Length: 299
Ligand SMILES: *Cc1c(COP(=O)(O)O)cnc(C)c1O
Image 1: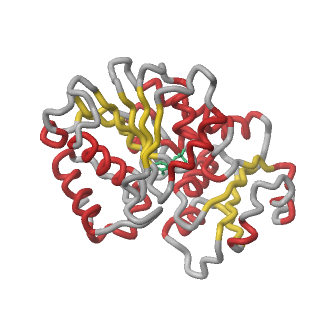
Image 2: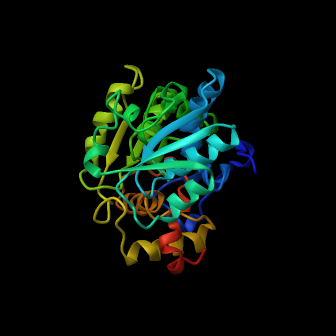
């Protein structure tokens, strides 16, 4: 089995024609290159959790997600790599398995399907106990890796962010990665989070409580580019992804990073930045989720 290797991460400048003359530089941190399955931010959110599981002698990891969850498949892979079993509690019945769930099974994850209603109980301490045996041998990681180790691990991403950037831009799902980075990044560097869902800025409530007092400045979320909601897309998004790839040779994912880059380009055009600003966009991965649209993509 191949390994997860941080040394493959690069910072790639975008083509100047993509952002024009209204801003000094736009670069992309290619966390998607960490690994093709455990892509991007998922590895950072998992790594300290996995370390904890191994150190404490747990035998398995249990976590949660929907049928298209990048977190679920990343956990399956990372657990296997570290000699741990993995159990995924899946939201919904899925009589037909999604490609993501098939991949999870391929990496040895045991899947337990629960109804949407039952899934709502997932954060109650004893609920998972009713579903699995040998409960005490399991380390439980919340959905999206949203715990203290997840945030701390995400904070390690700042090692790639040099002081010359005025802005750091990333896509937000649970806000775990965002909070981890904000806590670990000098506050003069602005953070801008793109939420790919309708009314997504409520997620600031999931970020705020986890920020240290010092770090709780110079950040904001926008949900203006949700394209109809989480997982929704249209033809202009596909066209954008193909154009972005053609110009920059960087594949974006349909759920998160494409909407972020689409929105960012519009914000640059609308004079939301100063001409001297230097932006670092974080490519958080998620490319395995493109299988449903692969036939329309030129990569
Ligand atoms: C999971 C994911 C995110 C969201 O990360 P959070 O820490 O949950 O906010 C962003 N981008 C991609 C590609 C992802 O897979």
